[in-house]
Image 1 (tube, rainbow, N blue to C red):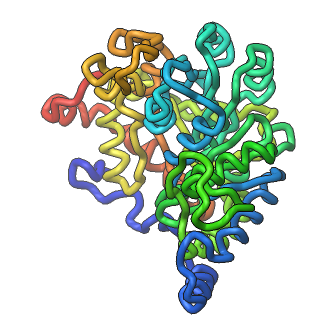
Image 2: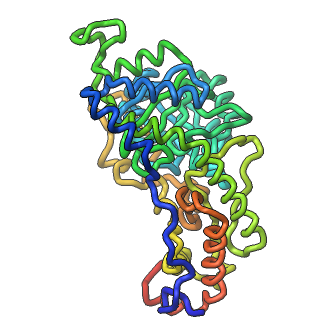
Image 3: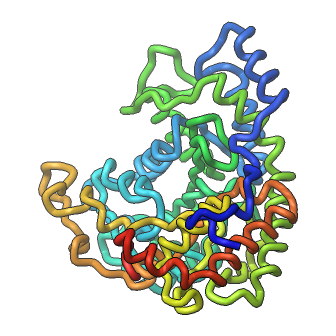
Length: 417
C-alpha cells in the first residue's frame, strides 16, 4: 500500500476525539452564571470551582487567576522573588516558566532534564544552586510528576522556595499524594488545550494561609478579604477570572477523573503495542508516579531504524496517514531571542546579573529531545483501542516504506538530523 504522502490511501480518515470536550453540563453551568446577572470574578462559581480544585488535590487553598503565566508570576512575587534573585528552571518547558521569572526581575537559571521524563534533573538542580538562588520551579512535564522525593529535599536543604508548575498535570499524583502538596505553591493553566479548560484561566494552590492571602491580594488589586472594596493595602493587579470561566471549569473538572482513566488505559495499550517496535522508544513511567494524567506522550525517534529517514519527514508521512503526531520544541528555552544579551536585563537597576550566557549555553539532553522527540497529544487517547492500533499501523507503514521517502526528503530540504 502506497504511502499517503506519495498519493496512496491513508491509514486513518476518521478524526480523533475533538478537544475541548463539552456538553450539557458546560451549557447549564454557563446559563446559571448568565441568569445570575453577576458575571465577573466575584460570582459564586469562582469560589465553587476553587473549592472543587483544592479538594481534588487535597490542598487547603486555591486562588484562581487569569492564566497559567499569571499564576507563575503571582507565585514568585508572593514568595518574595526580587531583582537579581536566581530561580532554577528546566530548559524544556513552555516559555512562561522562565519569562515569569524575568517579569519579577529575577534571573532564570536553566538546567538540563531527565532524558526519560523531560523533568528537572535533580543532580543538575543541586549543581546550579548559588548564594543568589531563591527558588526552584519544577515542571510536571506532559503530566508526569517531577521527582518529588529529591527536589523538595534539595529545596529544604538550601532554603529555597519550591513552585510546582503543574500546568500539564491536574489530577496527577506522586506516591499517592496529589501534585500541589510538595512545594510552597503550585500553578495550573486552563488554556484552550489543557486537560481542564475554560479557554484561558489559571489557579494557584498552597497549604499556607499566609501565602494564599498574599496571592489573593495580588490578584485583587491589593485588597484583603477582610477589607472594603476601596481599601488597598499592597501593590496588586486585576488577575481575576470571570464567572463564565469558573462555570466551564466546574463542569470540566467533574470529567477529569474518568478522562485520566481512559487515557491511562489507552496509553498502556499503545505501550504494549510498541514493545517490540523498532525505532520508537516509549520509556516506562516512574513507579513512584501513582497517577499520570497524560497531557503529552513523548516518543524518542531513532532514525537508524527507519533507514536514516529524518524525524521531520517521518512525521509528515505519519500525519498524511491521519495521525497528528508532532515534533517537540524546536529548541530549548535558552535559545529564544528573549534571553539573548540584547534583550536583557529586564530592569535598569544594578542588581540583575545573568547567571549564564544563554546564547552559549548547551544542555545535551534538552537539545537532544528537540531533535529526536515526538509528541502525541492527550485527545488522541480519549477514544478506544482501535485508535491505538491505527497509530501503530501508521508508524509501521512508514517504517516499511521509509526507502521510498528518501527522494522526498532531499527534495523537501528537511534536515537529516
